[in-house]
Picture 1 (cartoon, rainbow, N blue to C red):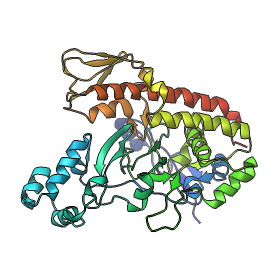
Picture 2 (tube, rainbow, N blue to C red; picture 1 turned 60 degrees about the vertical axis):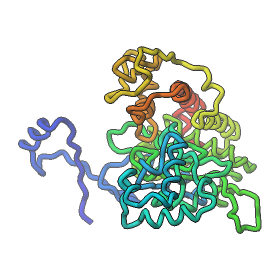
Picture 3 (cartoon, rainbow, N blue to C red; picture 1 turned 30 degrees about the horizontal axis):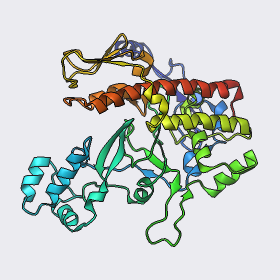
Picture 4 (cartoon, one colour; picture 1 turned 120 degrees about the horizontal axis):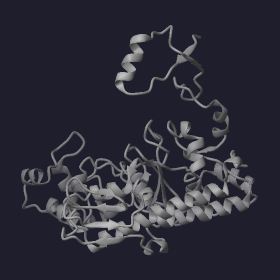
Length: 411
């Protein structure tokens, strides 16, 4: 087999042109690489950590059932901040007095190869339980919106997940795509209790892992079961000497994925595949990380009592809290939302710049409301987002204090 050589060339375009004009294949400082299984990448990898990382449990081996988030292919119609808007749209689709051409033009919902309005309307008009399909969804990070979860409106509502996502459950959300070069530290991890949009992360194609599986309507059993694989449960039981509750395992995993050391130590592998979970035989460490994971889950579900301890003030400058185009803007601890100067003060720069799933959360949430007048509930929710992200960063540091870099690989 031929040797494989690799070289990096970084810098501005002019610098690269200058270098290329004075070098060729023979004068390039090459590094020989040996692509590793299973990806055989033609780029250098940290082989010292390759074996260590691949001893851990891949997330798709931990959970028995997982699937992509739902795809609407018509978000502007199937998803909305206001429940009443979804109800109105579906009511109009069910109205036999309105013709197809009027509805297609009004809502910009043309027929496609996989979806036809006439067929969708027939389904809706004969569905006695049509209103029950309106539900909250995890549309973006810390941004839940109403959707119509049905193939009559969505191209791919993920029916294999619906029965589990519409009941009392937790959903871990992550992705195989990981983090692209230049996107900073890996942070493709989230939790929700609702059905998940496929673009809840910026790069899309996220996978959803429910904690519990519920029986279908025709099943003889009525009890839910955990979604952990038998092989994984056997391994964690052998490690700890007992079988933890499903929630305890879930919280532990969520804490591990929020460890800054874990994210940087295994950065090369997190960019190209599903994340992996190291297990510990130290019950004290397992329980401590579980406590941190539980706190993170409560924060990200917007259920933590800490969210009521606001860090910010709302300043009214006469703009009626409408988010203007070109906003929000950040300056010296203030998030300005319009030309009049309505703003949130006391926002730490670290919180403003905090990313989850490739999105700058504080910026994205407001930008997606361009032209919208923020209600008192919206303003309160945004203040809670700031608290949630601030607390998240503190807990991430606490997780690393519990498992310092010298403790990797975790035993």
